[in-house]
Amino acid sequence: MKIQLSVSHFLSVVFALSLLAGCKTTSFDTQDSGKTDASSTSSSSVLTVRVSTFVGRFVDRSENVPGEADLSYPIGIAIDALGNLYVADSFNHRICKVTPEGAVSTLAGNGEQGGADGKGSAAQFVSPGGIAIDAAGNLYVTESSPGRIRKVSTEGMVTTLAERDSEDIVKNKFWHPNGITVDALGNLFVTETTDGTIRKLSPDGVISIIAGDGEETRFSEPNGIAIDKAGNLYIADSWNNRIQKVSPEGEVSTFVGSEKGLVDGVGSAAQFNNPHGIAIDAAGNLYVTDSFNNRIRKVTPKGEVSTIAGSGPADSYGGRQEGYADGPGNEAEFAFPADIAIDAAGKLYVTDYKNHRIRRIVIK
Image (tube, rainbow, N blue to C red; front, side):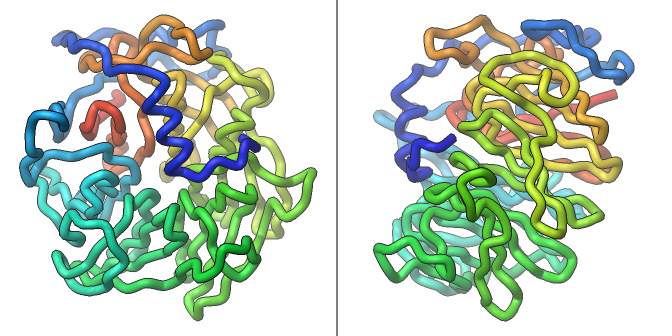
C-alpha cells in the first residue's frame, strides 16, 4: 500500500482502470463452489450463498440527473440495531439512510461540497468515506481530502470532531482519514492513509497514534477497520494485500495474506488484491471486500480464508474483471466492492461502488 496516495487520488486511479461491464442476471440458487485460483483449505461446510441488489440502479451521470433514491459511488456503510443502513454517498456528498424495506432518504448533507455543520440539509460534506455507528446510533464519518471527522446524531445533526488545519502531517491531527470504527467506550479508531498509521480519537478529543508509527509496523494505504469483543483491531492493509491485527497493547501482526493474488488458504497462504472494507460478526468471522478481485472473502478466527461471492476472469491489471450480476455467490459480479456491514441475522450488505448499488448477500 505504500504509494502515499490520498483516498481521492486512489479512487481516481480506480476509475481509470476499467469501464463498467454490461449487465446479466441469474435467478437460481446453487452451492458455492469456492471458485478461486486455488482450492480452498477452509474447514467451513459447503454453503448456499445468494447475492441480490438491495437498493440502487445505474444512472448515466452524463445524461441523467439522479433522483433522491439514486446513489452515486456509495462507499462507507454501517448498520444499526434496527437494521437500518447508513451509507456514505460519496459523489452526492451526503449520508443516506436505508430502511430494512429499502426506502432511501437523506439523513444529512445537501449535495453541495462544504464543511458546514448543522442539521439535515443544512450540513455539508466533501466526499464522505468511512462510516461507523455507536451503540446509541450516532454515526461517525471520515472525509479524506479535508481531513475531517464528523459526528451525525440520530436526528441528523452534524458536528465536526476533528479537522485538518495545517498542510503538515502531525500526530495530533488527521491528514487523510479513511476507515473508521468505534469501541464501547466511544473511542474512534481511524486508518490514516497518508502516513500509514492507525489513530485514536478519544471522546475528549485527544488524537494519538496507536500503530504504524515506525518503518517496520507501518501500513500501506490502510482502508477498512473493525474491532472485536476483546478490543483487537483488524485492518485492511490494502496495498500490502493483507489483513493486519492490532492488539489492545498496540502489537501489530499479519493475520492473513501475503502477496497480490486470488488464493484461498490459511494465514500467509491466502492472497488478496487490494482488500478495502472489513466487518466482523458475533462469532469473530471477518468479511472482506477484496476490491480489485471483485470478490467477497470470509476469514475465520483461525485465519482460514474462503471466497464466498464474486466471479469473472482475470483482467489486464492483475485483478478480476468487473461486472454486475445477481445470483448464486460463485456467479455474482461486482464492480469495486468497497465496504461491508453485517446485520443481526447475518446478512451482508456491500457498497458496490462503481455499480452505484447496495448488494445484499444471504448465506445459509
